[in-house]
Image (cartoon, rainbow, N blue to C red; front, side, top):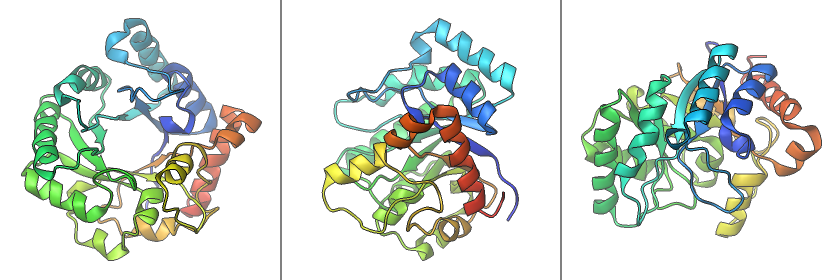
Length: 272
């Protein structure tokens, strides 16, 4: 396997402002960051809308410049009820100014025709900024597996599309390795690496808890991470480390925790 770029994904410490997040990623040895600049409005989650905060935008630019860290992708341009995807455009434009070419989305609408139409609109917006739109299937979302995601991308007819394989959701949505091999290489730009225990909860509350607050270091749990990643048709992808764990973050502090996440991921992928 070739050596890869390692990116620290914002959910690992979602309440850390982008500039500090970038400085910490640099100190911990990362190559890049993924920032959540389109707020979800969830309880306890701080909004970092760079498009609406010029000072934060300047400080984020400065942090990128001083550290040499790459800002590779931004999130989450959700497709959901009561959301007009056009509202995501300012954040996408602000990210494009900093060189971001990948935008992450996930789907929270049940109606297939409706979410397909919204996805096409989002791809059209992204194309104006030289960006692609990457669907992360989430176990408790409307589009929750690779089969649905593939159907959406094909139905869209767009070229600037992609799939984000998050190893937690891949495992918990019971996706098979062979399903990856049937997808075009050009659909894959980056992946999210993390781990969890063998048990797959059936209750949404339990799924959400692990996903947002108790993921394990790559290689620590039951997810066959290296097998999953090795079956992605494009091997020249960015490894995004999305490993939120509230207890460990509090105990170790952000920099040390981020460093341990990176060390575990490189060992898991035999790149240490």
